[in-house]
Structure formats: structure tokens, C-alpha cells
Length: 517
Image (cartoon, rainbow, N blue to C red; front, side):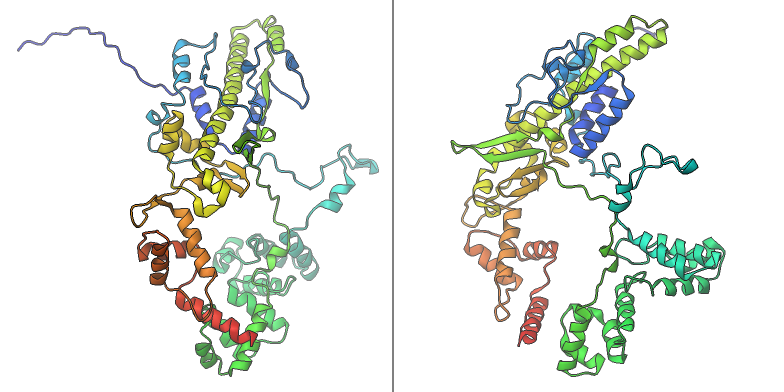
């Protein structure tokens, strides 16, 4: 068979991931703090972007675009727009086609990927340390703020280093001490390795141990211990209560955790009354002495969506406008500077800035509308939970919500990641509303796994020392209210809530009752 070369034309369609499309996907799954940090970075990078300040009018920044084109987030309580028109007259036709399909075709891009883990964001934190100013000639700089010294929170490391500077004069021992303090976690425990630290500093392990024992004598009592037993032992030694019986008790903390008093009486060689006094002494100690000091800025939990009951019996779903960065494209400034652009590089830079700014405003607008649309459907599906509590939480999955609002389930997954809803039942993560189904006995409506966990916890909290419920008993009680569940599932849910077994709970309750007597 003879072979000869030939030319063929074939037409096919494919989804091309442009940087702009990747940006829009990324914005969907960012938390409110991460979004603020991202927009702040874009404001610094792009001269055509401008922040909309509080009370600024529609013509702020000289933007000539219409209101939707300004990229402003919809006002709280507004209905999600049915339009997905993200087209731009200056953009290429292929991009417009992708923009139109963004809500429905994300599964073709990343069909199996999981939502991104929520990461830490450095931007937005409000440090309390004073700014550096000019101190030459006895004059303070413009940024000098004396109140910052008064409001600065003392950390555990600062507290230990202050004591180290007084207790140690030798430079080498002080260097060892500073490195040890750097390996102390927020709870006050030394997390390093003595041998490794000695090798790193070029000293002997005995020298490191000596400085470590010195720091363990600092305040707060019990600091710089390597484990719980050592932490308790340090505090007991300072109280002159570390006798042989107490040493045996500290060496057998696992028996204390299991409330096995008979075994403790044998290993400590004491009677029940002495053992009760020793346990009381242990309970008055601080297992995490470092937590008494500040460890950094704690960011409050800010909801992305508010849900409150309306006057007509429905639920009002509103976006939290305070978490939505509001930016616009300054068309007036662009029109001014583009006239003075001479080189092709300058013109290309301004064109890229305009395109990037326009895309960001539209992405923010679409992100807000998508969050509102998903939140409204979740509220519709979980109406019983909002009215009556967690026992009435319905089983729900991403596909159910996605089909109801005409989006791909991967889009819903991204939208619900790192987002919180303020409800009459408290502030909860959007992912909380999605749980697997537990079948009902008798063929009734299935139960949410979260609702079943709540029932198990409620039954255990109501038990007494004479009537501790085993896992088999819990299965029977759940079947009586129409929940068909296996014993291993009950055990898994109980362990997931850090609830001990029935044997351990009985020991604990009997111990508490004997102490009360």
C-alpha cells in the first residue's frame, strides 16, 4: 500500500486556561481575609485600579463604565443576577466564550480536585509594635507612638528572654538559652532535641541540659518542660510536694486519665483518702503554662453571609458588604496617561493593566453573586435546621445544590470553602450544611450524619453514673427514634467527638461521685 503526504484541516473545541480564568477560579475559594489581601496587592500593582471608599458616589474615580461594569459587589440583600455576561469589547472573542461558561464548565478544568486548604494570611494583621523612628539628636521620628509601648502584648519568649538576661552573664550560655527559648511552643513546652541543638551550636549536650534546667526554673512555673509529666513535676518540686508517692502518680498519668483509682492506689502505695488529695493537687497545676502569655494576633470569625428571618416567614439572605472589597477601573486616569504613551512597551503595559483591572472588577462581582446564589439555595434546603436546630439538619451534598442553581458541583465546592454564614443558630461554616445521609428505620426520610452525632452526644450527656450507655444501647435508642445505624458507626462518631468509651465514662462518673461524697 503506497503512502503519500497530505494536508487536512480539523476543527475542535477545547477549554484553554488563561491567567484571567485561573484568577476567577482562585477568587471563588478565597476566604474574606485572603480576598482582601489579594485585592490590596492588586491595588498596589495596578495603577488603574482604585478603591471605592465609604460614601463615595457613582462617579468616583472618574470611571465611565456603567454600574455593573464598575465591578462593585451587589448590595446586601440583593438578588443574584441571572446574567453571566462577562464580555469585554476590548477582549478577544475566545475569552468571552470561556467567561460565559465559567459557572458550568469548571468541572472540565479541575473535575477531581479538592477545595484548597485555608492558609494563613499575613496581610491585614494589626501588629502592636511601634514603628521605627529617627532617634538621632534626641528627636523622635514622625511615626513614634508612645501608646504602642503600653499596648504591646508581652509574649512568652519576651518574658523568658528578660529573665535569661538577668540570670546569665556568660555569652555562650546566653546564646544556648536564646536558642532553647526559640524552640518553646505557645503552650510552654520545649519542642527541640538537646543532642541536635548541642551539635548545631558546637557545645556539649550537658551544657544544653544545664541551661535547659535553668530556664525550667523561670516563671511561669512548669515552662520549658519536654512533656506533661515533666511539666507537672517541675511545679510540684517548687511546691515541695514531689514525694515518692507523687512521683509514682506522675509516672502513671495514663492511669489517672482512665480514672483507674484501684491501680493508682497500688502503684502509689497510698489509701483512697491520700490518693484523692494527690489527685486534687495535680488538678490545681497548670498543664499549659505558656498560654498565659500572648502568642500573636487572633483574627475574629467574620461571616460572609447573614441569614435572618423576614417578616413574612421567609429567610432574608444578605452578603456581608464589609468583607467585599469594592474597586473600580479609573477610566479617566487611563484616558489621560494613554495619550502620553510613546513606546510600544508603555502602550502594552497600559493595555494589560486595563484588561486586568476590568477582569478583576467583574470577577469580584461574579464571586459575590455566586456566593449569594449558593447561600440562598443552602438556606432553602436547610430551612428546618434554621427553625428547630441541628436535629433537623437534612442530608445534603454538593450535587443537589449544584443541580438546583445550574452550576457545576466543583464550583459549589469552591464557593463553600472558607466561607461562613451567620444564622439564628450561630455562625457556621458553609461546609457544615453538607453531610452524608443515615437511613431511617421503616423507610422514612433519611437523617443527616451531623444530626445523628448531635443525638448521640445528647444521650451521653444525659446519662448518670448508674446508667452509662454502651454503644449497643445507643444503637437501640437511636432505632427507637427511627435512625437505622450500625454499632461501628456509633463508635466512629463517638470517637470523632472525643467521647471516651462507656467503661471510661463510668469510672469517671463514679470517681466524681466519690469525690463529691
